[in-house]
Image (cartoon, one colour):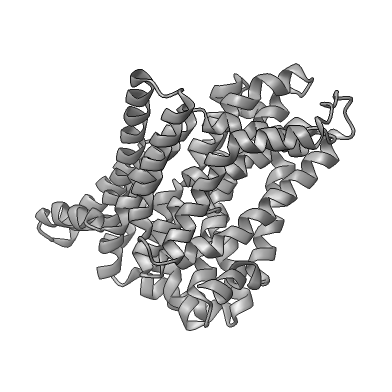
Length: 423
C-alpha cells in the first residue's frame, strides 16, 4: 500500500508539473509518513546523498564549462571546427555538431554545450539559409555528446551510486561519443544536400593551421585532464578543480574575461549546481525509501525472470530508459534507476562500465525527446523557434541516436576497448 501511494504521488506531482526534485521529495515524505518512519530521516538521507567527495566534481565541471563559454574558448573551438568541415555540404550544421563534441570535452554538460554552441552558431546558420527549425534541431541534437564524452556529469553520478571507477567510465565514454558525433555528421550531410544552401569556401590548410593555433589551449585542456586522471596525478574531482583553474588562466590570456562576465559565470554555475544537487538530495531519499521496501530487488528479480538472457534484458533496459528519459530529469533518473537495474545487470554478467555507458546514452537521448527534453527548450530559447516546430524536425536525429544506442549496447568493445587497453 505504501509503495503504491509513493508512486501514485510521484506521478500526480509530475503531471501537475512540479519540479522533479519537489515531486521526488514530497512523494518520499508521504511514503515515510505512511510507513511510520520518523521524518527526521529525510534530513539525514538528504545530507548523506551529497556527502561524497566524487560529487564535488559536478559543480566544478559546471563552473569550468561556464568560464570556458564566456572566456572565448567556445568561439575558438567553433572556428577550428569550421576550418575542418565548414566547406562541406551542410558545413555549418557540421560545425555545430563537431563544435559541440569539442565543447563537451570541456564542460561535461549537455545543457552547457547547447547554450554555448547554440549562441555562437545560430546567427551564421540562419544567414547561410538554414531553416530556423533545422538549426534549432541540429544544435539540440549535437548537445547529446555533452553527457557522453568525458568529463560527463551523468557518468560521475553513475560512478558514485555504483562505486564503479569514474576514471574508467570517462575512458569508456570517449568512443561512444565519437560514434554519435560521426553519425550526426553523416545525417546532417544527407539532409542538407537536398537543400540549396550556400557552401562556405575552403580556407585551405593555412586556415586550419591558423584556427588550430587559436584553439590550441582549449583543445589542450581535455588532454591535460584525462592524462592527469589516468596518470594518477589527480582524481576526477581534483581534475574538475584543475579545469576551473585552467579555464581562468586561458580566458585571462585571451583577454575576454571581465569581472562582470566572471560573476555571471559563477552565478549560472551556482544555479545549475544547486538544481543538480537538490535533485540528488531528493532522489537519495526516494532511492533509500524504495530500497528499504525491497522494490529494486523485486523489480530486478522480475526483470531477470522475464528476460531470461543478457540480450533480452538489455533490450528491456533500453526501451524502459528511453521512456523514462522522455519524462524525467536525467540526473534524477540515473540515481533512482541505477539502484533498480544494476543488480540484474550484474546477475547477467554485464560489464558495469558498459552498463553505465548504456544508461547514460539512453538518458542523454531523453534530453532531446518531448515532452521534457531540456535541450529542446534551451535550443528554442536561443533560436526563438517553438519547441513544437523543433520536434517535427528533430526526429531523424533521434532515430539515428537510437541506432547508435543499440550499436553501443550490442557491440561492447565500442565502450570497453579503451578501458581494456589503458584502464
